[in-house]
Figure 1: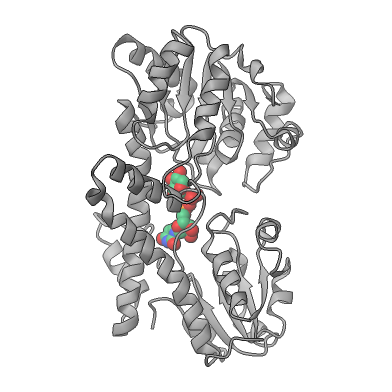
Figure 2: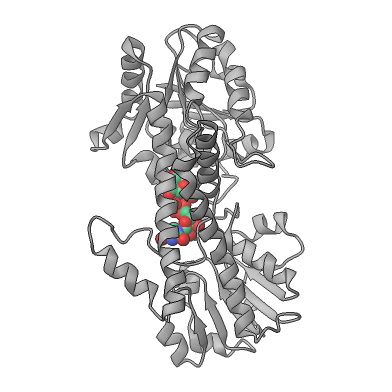
Length: 437
Ligand code: UDX
């Protein structure tokens, strides 16, 4: 099939490359010429395992190209809109200006029968508004909403073999036609057993935000239990294991720690709350504000623990911060709890030396005032305290005996509860996790 992808950020770049990998002919469009040049040279502008390989093979095959010229979508019959919907400045609501601009730019090139598939995460009600607008700007084109559930670090696999496909379609023949076209696009996943949910626009839009709200709630739930564990002497990790054995609850996303960050969960729960308030149903999602607050409190808890372990004397102390990305296998520092902790510790007068296997460049761009190193051993050298805030495998594998020989103070705050506390204590460390004895 001939496909265009409008917006080549995280979502769009992966989607374009994955669709070409599946055999489709794809053009990726973005207004950022540096990004397009990089993608055209098969160099992803961000770290994502597996993406360099499929970009290289798809561009070499001639099935994938990139351009800043929107008129190049003219040959395509399926158009995915994958632009960003960041949080508005000064508000919790989503900023839809890039989505609106993409539809304005695309409309003149749409032909009757073309299918436009929205992938961006949007407030409920957006698709029906855009569909009404397309009816006059591009008569005969059909809008569907086809949310994306990819996880950073697993984006390629999640796109090629998603755990479900959701199509929000209009009623009648148009809806059936749009669903049929998307079935063709995703034929290999469907043959592999991926379930398809065909529904209306509002449900499809809500599926995406409610999935993220659920995940965020699950994480904040266990972090709230960590807060209770901290005042009762209980252990949140054992608690998570025990409740996780209940198949109705499940152990995944029950890892207590410094909390969630990234480009999706924080902004999506805020935008969802803002949309519910606009709809006069603010009370239905009021709990998500609490979910957000619990999450942000965990960052403060990590800082408080460091202060406590340094007997209140943080000023001038050298602190090694291990991790900057919002999660391992990513270079993304958007709303990263790890970077936030590093910045706040420096604000308290600490000499922070921060490290991350992938995210140093992105962190430095946002916070050039911090001191960075790519080498974890350099970060640890002479440190008065160590804070682990992103659970990269190489940090989990650190040898407490070896590290004790590098630092000045053998105190560690494990902000991801990912180290073996007993092993670190046995090597002479004062170890503190979150919600752990
Ligand atoms: C998320 C959703 O999982 C994905 O479906 C959606 O498309 C985009 O948002 P992503 O942002 O890549 O994906 O990260 P995810 O793996 O969900 O992790 C989010 C955050 O939660 C990370 O900061 C992670 O460290 C944190 N987390 C996750 C926890 O603190 N505890 C857990 O148990 C799990």
